Image (cartoon, rainbow, N blue to C red; front, side, top):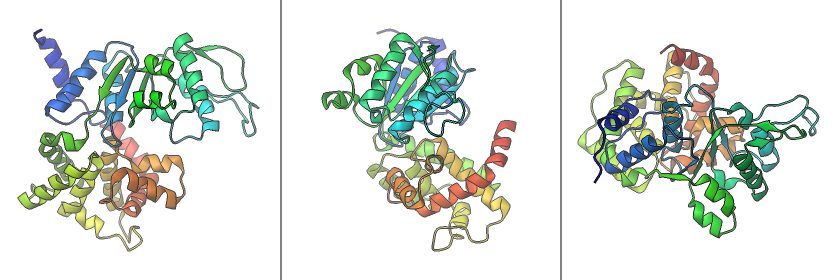
Length: 346
């Protein structure tokens, strides 16, 4: 058996100590396996497929690969193939020329062009139509594309990382996904285990989240009681998502519960002050970091509220109040500039 090199150990430890933006928390065997696979592909440009249930942290893995690799100083561009209508997906990916279609009043640069020398992340890649899959296949094989409405060949050298909550090979067998594209994308596969399969990580996750809640609120927060911890663990056994754990912690933590109780029956804030609003926005932004079905993504989709409620419920589980989550989104919109400025100063 080949010995692990000291440099590999140092790199893996450093990977786990990265800033919150892409830090992966956990010491279980399952997470160590994920970290080892990330380390394997850091220095290469091979396409990677990340497979895991919704909310298991696929985007964190993408960020770890990008920001720890040689392309870290170049753009990481993300496109959610499930969130964009098919007739707009090609334009989002490849851009379009002025006058290419009704409403195209100016030239638009697509994600493929922006991601040149960097990384293009295709989230929920199985939701692409077969026609769009054929165009992506050409990009991978020839490293060229044209903007919609244009005929100029544009070169691209973007590393492609894909993610799906489905079994990609099953989609191939079902004729929903091209077999040739499957082999092009699935050069290296990383499976992200759901939280219920890595229960050994729950204490560490809880400890980290409680510590961050304390920092955000400016108060010392006591550890969870045995009964509260038992409640969390029993709930997580049924689910898979980091956000479920976060939402349960919000309900149990005294300093956060105070804000939760200030919401009226419709799920909207009642008389919160600016600093309280900021705290709520920061708390939900932490959950955002861990890549569950996040409320900010729902906002970016521009969905009607009744649809957004269902989306958040579907992603966060029945224990999470979708109206409360959407109220958080409203506050995030108001405080985006402030939060972004503070984040950049850190």
